[in-house]
Image 1 (tube, each protein chain N blue to C red):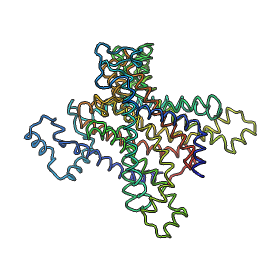
Image 2: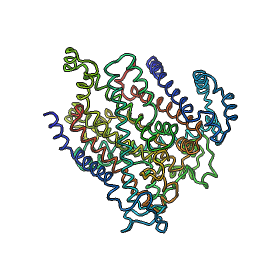
Image 3: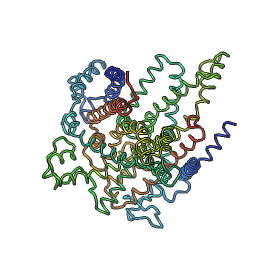
Image 4: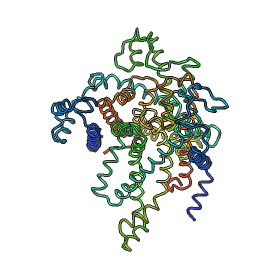
Length: 280
Length: 336
C-alpha cells in the first residue's frame, strides 16, 4: 500500500519520469552498443578521414585518428555507466554495513567508523580520488575503486543516521524483545525500513560518479587507450590541441556526459519525491 | 566563543591527524616505496639502498611518521623531484592564484545565484522559477572541464572577446609587479589600470567555469530558504501592515534566508579548492590545481603529496570558519 503510494508520487513528479526514461534509454544504448554500432571503436580507423566534421557517414564527425566519434561516444557511455554504477555499487556494499554497525553498536566501534568518515570527508572528493589513483596506478578499475571510496563516507553517514532514528522505533524494540539477534534486526528490520533514502542517494551518486569518472579520465587517470571513455575523449582533443579547431571532438562527448548526469540527477529527485520519508 | 573555538580545534585534531596519516601512507603505498618514487624507476638497487638509509626509511614506520609530522609542522614538505623547488615555496606562490580564482568564482555564484533564487521563490511555479530550477539542474550536471572548453571556443576563439588562458598577457605583464600574488589586488595597489583590465579579463572565463556548480547550488538553496522565510508569520504581518513588497522580500525575508546560504557558500568554497584542479588545467592557471596536475603527469609525488595535504587541511579549516561565522550572521546563535 505504502509502496503503491510512493510509486504514485514518483510518477506524478515530472523530474522522475524524464529521468527514468533518459536513464533507461542510456542503459539500452550501452547494452546495444556491440550490436548496433556503426563502426568498431578500436579497429576502424581511417587515416584519410581524420578530423572530418559531422557528415552522413560520420554523424558526430571523426577524431584525430580517423575514428568515428558516434561509435566512440556510444561505447564511452557503456564505459562511463559501468564505472559509475560499479563504483556506487561498491560504495554501497562498503558503506551500508559500516553505517548499520556504527549506528546500532555505538561505543568505540562507532567512534572509529566516524573518525574514518570524517577523514575521508575532509578531502574534496575529486582530490581524494586523484590521490587514490596516483597510488594504485591509472586504470578503469582504479578509477572505479577511487570513486567508490569517495562515496563510502556518504553512505555510512546516511545509513548511520537512519539506524539511530529507527532503533528507537517500536517494531525494532519488539523484535529485540522477541529475542532476534542483532544481525537479524539489522538485516530484516532496520535495513528494509531505512532503504529508501539510500536508494535516492545511490541514484544521485551515479550522477556524481559519472562526473568524477569522466574527470579522472580527463586528467589521464581513468580509462587507458584504446578503451573509449567520454572524459578521455575530451582529454585527447584538449591535449592534442584540436579541441578548438575541431569542436565536434569535444561537443558530443561533453553533451553525453551532461545527459547521463542529468538523467540520474532527475531520477534521484523523482525517487526522493516518491520514496524518501524525510521529503514528505 | 573562545572556549568553543578551543573545543572545536581540539575536536579537529583527530581528523587532522588522520589526514596526515593518510598522506604519509600515500608515499609508502606506492609500489616500490618512497625511495624508488624519489629516484625513479631506473634506479639501481644500490642507489635505492643508499637513499633508504639516508632518508631514514629503514627505521620503524612510527619513527618515520613522527618525523613526517615534525617536518609538516615546520612546513618542511620536501622538494619537487622535477624542479627542485621546495614544496612550501611553491605553495606560497600558487596559493594566492587559486584563492583569487575561487573568490572570483564564488562572487559569480553569489551575484547571480542569490537574485535568481529570490526571484524563483517570489514567483514560485511561474516561468522565472522553472527557468531558474532547470538552469540549476543543468548547472550541477555539467562537467566543468567541458564547459571551460566550450566557453574558450565561443568567447576566446570565435568572438575573441576574452583571453583563453593564463593570468595576465605578456604586454600587460611588462608593467606589472606581483606583490601579494592576488593579481587583481596587486594591479589596484599599483594603480595600474591597464593591468587591472587585463587581469580581470583573464579571470572571467575561469571564474564562470568554476562558479557554475556553486551558482546552481546557491540558487537552489536561496530559493528553498526564501520559500521557508516567506511562509512565516512575520512576513504576513509585514505585508498586512502595508510594507512594500520589495522591502518584505529584500529586508525581512532575505535576511533570514541568508544563514543556510552562507553555510553552503562556505562549504562550496572548500570544494572549489579541489574543483580548481580541472578548471586550472583547462585555463593554464598557475595555481595549486594545475600544479598538482603537473605533479601527477610527471609522477612528482612530493608535489602531489604536499598539494593534497595542503588543500585537505585548508578545506577543514575553512569549514571551521564557516561554523564560527554563524554567530556573526545570526545573533540567535550562541556558542558555549
